[in-house]
Length: 73
Image (cartoon, rainbow, N blue to C red; front, side, top):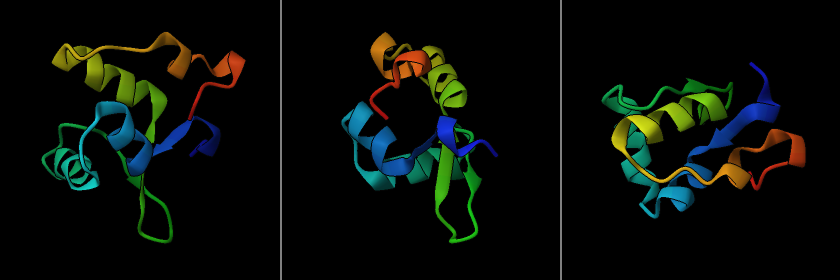
């Protein structure tokens, strides 16, 4: 998996202003796509996170997702 495009659950939680456990619950319920790295932590591709936000009608900060400018993640 391309780690450059991946976000941690903490980054997703901070972006959405929710707890880390809320993000894990979204993953567990299959609402947010994620994969596990060998250490057992989850990673979320930026494209999957953007799709999640758009599907739920949540705000999308273009600067956060602009990979050419480095993004904030």
